Amino acid sequence: MKRKVLSIILGAVMIAATLTGCGSNSAETGKTDGSGNGAATQDASKNGTGKEAGTKAAGAAGDSYKIYLITMDQMDQYWANIDKGCQQAVSELQAEGTGVVYKWSAPDKKDDAQQIEKINNAIADGAQAILLAANGPTAVNASLKEAAEAGIKIVYVDSPADYPAVRTLSTNNEEAGKTAGQALIDALKAKGITSGDIGIISVNTSTDSTMNRENGFRSAFEGTDFNILETQYCEGEAAQSQNAASNFLAQGCVGLYGCNEGSTVGVGNAIREAGGAAVGIGFDTSDAILELIDQGYLLGAMAQNPSTMGYEGIKTAVNAIQGEPAGENLDTGVTQVTKDNLADYK
View 1 (cartoon, one colour):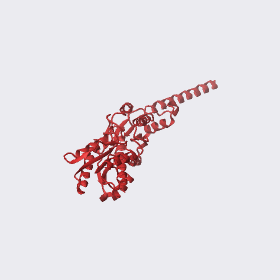
View 2 (spheres, helix red, strand yellow; view 1 turned 90 degrees about the vertical axis):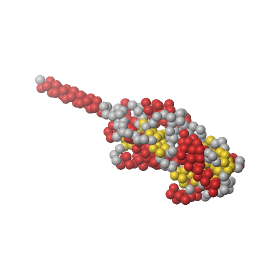
View 3 (cartoon, helix red, strand yellow; view 1 turned 120 degrees about the vertical axis):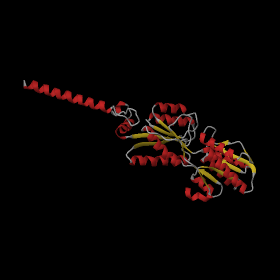
View 4 (tube, one colour; view 1 turned 45 degrees about the vertical axis):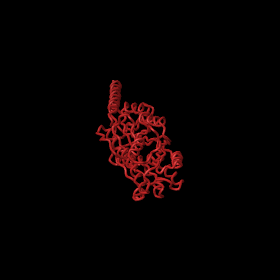
């Protein structure tokens, strides 16, 4: 009889333990990851990716967000400065107790197919927000639509696509281009030059930011006696841009303009090779550009604030993931760098 009673008691204890374990699993899977999506908090074998499961579980427990920065390429120092701004914001957020898993991913050159692949990889990796400098206005739209449908927040830095985003952080490129044009006109007039051909080196016809810089630059010359030649598009590659700039100089151009970092380096190098045969101006402040300004082969360059784009981009992404207002689009400003203020950028 005692044995029967003992067997009944042990059986009841085992049943109760089993029910308690089931109740615990049900409660865990009801948690969210901080973005309104259900978090996968069960073991890695449930989804086959231990890394992803760990990230989502961390998000469920204490606000950890996976954010990608995807730029046009890895060639320009400019993109590295956006990354620096992102890293600064991530450090501050982590110090405040908000976990952020941050990754910078970019093609090795400006290429729509490669950028689409980077976006698709971010989606597959469980990104909750993507900071994007779009290579073109439409090529990545299908991938961005897929990202948005997966609940991923899209923030544009430097150059937007046509697909809706929660916020855009960029330079007012048209105004900056116009400022560069006026600065070149003033420098040429100071040399007694009031007419002549002007050459433009740019990236391509699909990149929003550089096209606006070109249009703004051209607008500065309206009503003058200068003649702006057909723009040469060199994909932002310094060597190709230098060849195009050298061809402009061989045609007798009195002024040259580069629309991005690689274009500007090419312009400055061509002018140096030609012994200072023209006045050049451009965009961005890489070490190479600053050296060309210091040596007198570039009049100057329009300095953007890429670190601000990265910094505010991360903060914007976290706010958006948390369901807070992202804020209005932000003009991150531009400053003309010349020999006079060169030391501030070294």
